[in-house]
Length: 486
Image 1: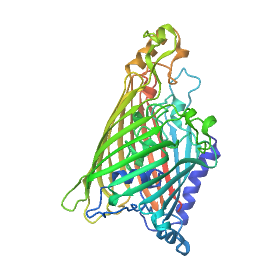
Image 2: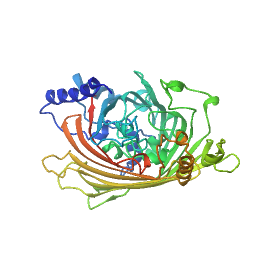
Image 3: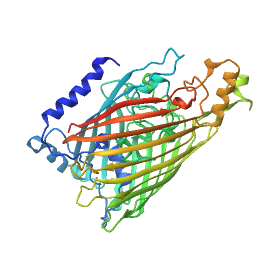
Image 4: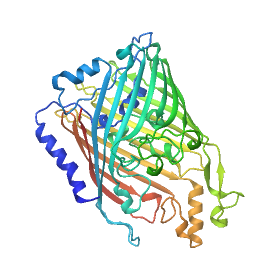
């Protein structure tokens, strides 16, 4: 990344902050994420007295940096149109030297970011089509991620990198959703991303590392799992049998090379059956209680699983059931594979008189994958989000997360065999040694600069980068900034 690209976002942020001095504080840093609204809809219980007929849930309305000139934005929302535009920027750099002996590794920094445009339309207000809404997400991405400089390809130091098509406009999602029985039943279909609805949380992008922000990385362990910014055809049904519970299931149709620029650079290639590789069928059950005398201690507990019918290669055996690292033949193919997850967050403290976003929330989860085809056999994470612990800064937050990934045994054994036979060039996953396990710890402090603007200085430490013990521990410093433009 050139020095000019690194300097411009930081300079832009400083300029915006200077122009906005004195504005009201409100927005939290993860609200600028383009899939925030979708994950909030999953994480929000029914109202105490829900309606009985079709009704579109209100769209998220984060405070924006640009004022509502002449009331245009308010008028559009009153008539069912919500347009959100935001910029997220992430700068990261390794402060430790990379492991010697690898000519492609170096000490350095990088910058990555995106401009996101989200368009929600309430067709009940527009033309009287009760309960129906459409959602479209577009993005423009730039930059890369610093962790590859020191040999890591597992826990990307910047969650925003690549995959966006490197074009001015990349279509991520465009789908319709019908909400029936006062929100008790929601049916959606169109171009969607699986990981916006399943195994997701609006809390994840309080962090930068891609092992969690967006979704836990292990739950999308291969490139046939639809995740931002790659949309595929899909349909999803979500029901809420009670105020604090939900169950949802879906069918998505993964497409060949859906993350490759050469295949679908703009996101507007609506391919037919020839590009569809199979189905991804997730199901998830959730409990979303609100504890405390005033119901301010919100919790979210979810358990889910996925059946994937895309052909995937075995990570150890060849087509004859022998070690592929010995025979060098094509890997055995599996037409069925699975993943499962349990995730939770629970607010344990809410300061009296503080905004609803303040307080301390614990967050944790565990993801398990099919050992035959997985790179990550399992992943676990645990941390906290502490917002408003400084009384005079109720919207600032101190956040910590620790993530641990266990590499599948077949991957480790295959790589060990290649190295024993002097065939290091055949190692998969960009490995330069045997992959076994990896851990990343991250801490940041979010500063609400002004209305719609936030910045979070960030520190990450990578143990066993790329899951390899032969790579030295890496320390990474950086920041994440968000500007909710309007």
